[in-house]
Amino acid sequence: MTNPVPAVGGNQTDLSKVAILEGALREDADRVRAGAQGLTTIMKFVDKGEGFYKDGSFIDHTNVAYTGAYGNVLIEGFSQLLPVIQPTEFALKEEQTNILYEWIEKAFMPILVRGELMDMTRGRSISRATGESHVQAMEILRSLVRIAESAQPEQKKQTSLLC
Image 1 (cartoon, one colour):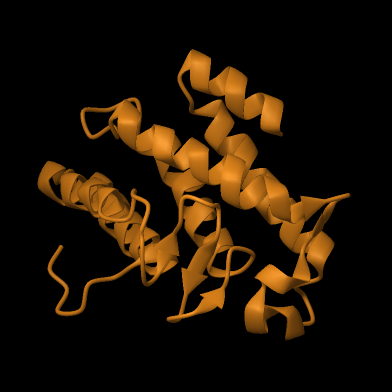
Image 2: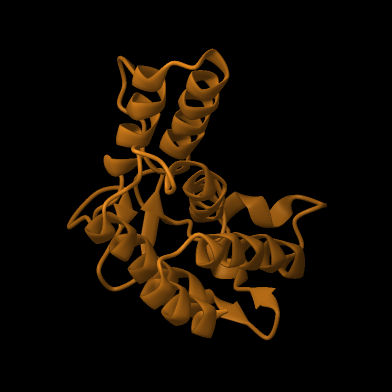
C-alpha cells in the first residue's frame, strides 16, 4: 500500500480493510499481506503525537482526546479484520495482538460507564444526532466481543472478562 501521506489510527484500519478485502476478492495474497502489514504500523504505544499512550489515553487530530470517536473507528476496524486474517498466513503476531488487548483494558474499558461512553472522549462527534453516548458504547462493546471471539484461548479468557 503506497500512500504519499502515512495514515494513522482509524484511517489506517480503513485503508487496511479495503486492501484486505480487495486482495481476498482478487485472490491477491500480496494485497492482503499489504493490508495486514498496514495494521502493524499502528500497533504500538506512542510517547508524543497521535495514537495510544501507555496511560490509556488516545490522541488524534494533534491534541484531542478522541478514544470515543476515532478510537472507536480504529477498534471497530480491528474487530472486523481480525476474524478474517487471524486464521490465515497473514495473522498478526501474538505480541501485536497483546497491544490490542492492552488498548482495550487501558483505553476503552475505563470510558464505558453504566452502558454509556464518556462524552469527554468523543470530541466533535458528541454533536451528531445519531451518536448518543449509549449507542457509541454499544458500538465499542460490539467490537470488543468480536475481538474476544477471534482471540487465542488465554487472550479470549482475559478479553471476555473485560466484556
